[in-house]
Length: 379
Ligand code: NAD
Image (cartoon, rainbow, N blue to C red; front, top):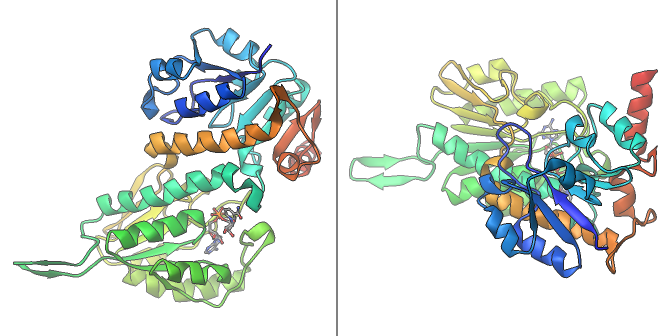
């Protein structure tokens, strides 16, 4: 009996991505895996059921068969309880699982002896780069944020010389120069804007400059664990805001991408800073999902304050669904390749990538931080 992998239609409202694309189905078939796709799962990303059938997948219309016959279920968004309840006991669930919230799901996964892999927890080490879905999706979000901002802005990004005179290029400030921020800098540069980048990790200065942007140096060094930023002290926050306010005021477009894993997004742009901006300026806040980097951000809404537009879009990668699905499916395939060996599933708990990304396994919550959170919640 070959391994069966099932891919359900995503249930999150507005989601257009799908966990597997036909090309990856072909690669899995070559490994001897049978793939079942829920009918219509790829539709919004541009893939018809027939595209999957041509890649040798089976199209499944019956949900019970989809889940109960699956050794491995692949999702993009965290599986809701309704999906988890249908999974076969002892099977594998792989996808974004949002390890920082709604811990009850993990108790159900534990009780059903499911091995749940979190794409968020894949370690940021060289060997795991091809499995790094946070990066593949963040890069897409950074690119799209610039396009959203350029659509909302009433100004050109490039300098234009016309018969009616010369128009100055837009000034774009990118706050947070991680994967999304660096892609936003590159995209804004390609559109001809004058770009500044800012981050609390001093190590990114060179990367910002190599993309043709100016680094805003505030002399705060907040490197934290695992290459991420740490939270700033109150004194550091004040120092940051005092200097950043001038750069925000000079910008036509501000794109914020600052995040701290497992914590609410840091508040970087205050209402007063927005009030110092020129009329017609635009803020696109990619951190809206975690509460926003701007004090005035309302998730998924456009706020107008003193003629400044502040927009906090949600699920930006989902709006570039075809390429986002393609890259995500490759990330999944590469992680699957670690656990599928010679037609059998073999979960090697000594492998760091597996150890870090597994949340539940063999009836245990094996991820220490999720286990602590569950214990603290019930204490
Ligand atoms: P992220 O999404 O967690 O945060 C985005 C950026 O916001 C980060 O650069 C962070 O430093 C910055 N930030 C946080 N608080 C801030 C504040 N108060 N003010 C300004 N900026 C603030 O980051 P990410 O894109 O996931 O990247 C995190 C780290 O992981 C980076 O060091 C990145 O280079 C590294 N990384 C490594 C690999 C790898 O080696 N395989 C892959 C991807 C990313």
